[in-house]
Length: 605
Image (tube, rainbow, N blue to C red; front, side, top):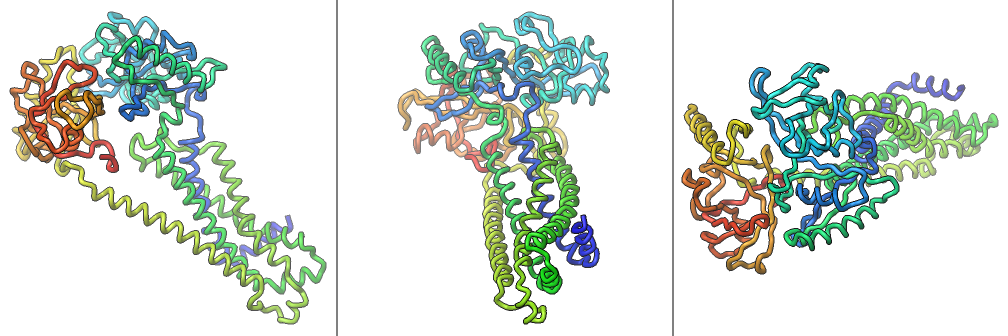
């Protein structure tokens, strides 16, 4: 306690030195706590499910198509459920949009189709009401829904009486049976949930449109489950030849929700702030070494009066820890503010968790890093001061001596600072260069002046494949008549935006540069005539779609330049055909070629 009181007096008597050290420590520790909060939220904190260690994603894979992780088909999900023994529960989630009416203006709400077993697999229970029952996945059952917690609070004022009432979804009166917790958003992102109705006669085994999760039975390891699913997929390939090239890959929840790029980015940033901490420690150690020169007389007198080396080291370490704890408290406050700011700055779905928060693990990290930092920058000055030679000090009259170990240490610490700072600058320079390169990437379309919105006609009002296009035509005609609008079009999915992103293996039966019937994963979208002109995507060859290309006309498509080159090289693709693996008997004739477009990421072709 005497050492602490003395350290506080020294800090109060030299405010400039104290502010310099405390603010430097606060900056370094605050950055580390803030970054560790992200690291903790992404990689360490358990996901909000009852058995996160036993829940796995059951994904499909195709080595020939280089698809390491793909969605599941409904029929494959059903077969897995019937043929596997490793899972206590197996559930699937699909994706849908709902038009909510009857409460003010119609509102389009994103939603999901849940198999009844999914919430049991995740160990998630409704806030109010009940989850879906097993028989509600059968065709013909009464329409029911669960409302997400966010929508329940926002639109219904957290009304507990909503359960049992009827809402209108896509024009159909639907009974609300429960309120789904916000934790379900991690795997779905929806706000309204309806049962995944399985009509085996209408499903296609190659339509990968759901995501499957399973809860491993107690005592069943990840490796055992993977081995069993490998055997199941082989049997299914023999039973259903169209999926013989498709296998099963199990993924942990961390692998499912944390991409390798995100994991690498978080680790790199955490390493960077640790470098900043090391630089701060070297910097403060240098300051303390320089300051110890002015305290040589004090240290010498303590030694002459009988203070032991351990006693002097303890005093100097207490001083450095007192300084560090003061900076650590400020750093923790700064980290709290920084974390709050990060939660507001992160775009939606950047991280697999809704918010980055503080918990007991972060508090322990803050305490540990504060103490370690205090010891790191205090040990060298403490060791140096404890080795003061009293006789040499008397001969020098209390002045520092050039070439002493203290001056050599200060030069060594300065060199370490410079080396660490150089590494950080090089890394930052490379990141800035990558960012500049990404900003210069040619998107393939012009986004300036474009305004987008989503429209999802309810099937009850626009049934079948032929009625919705008439609605879209009327909407487009109305939009084009607005003064200042130069064009309007419809797409099932827009680059870097909303809509349905669909990938399907395709092949050609005519002359090609690939081996016969070789499958190639191709992204495809449905667009209206004039879409390429509105998006400023150049038409390089052939023609655009027209209103005559309706569902009664022959099947046609327009391909990107890269797709044409993949299948036919430099040959003219106009008039050639592509076929989907799920429907190999239906050829699509190429009528046009357009420029390549970056669709989902700047660093991906």
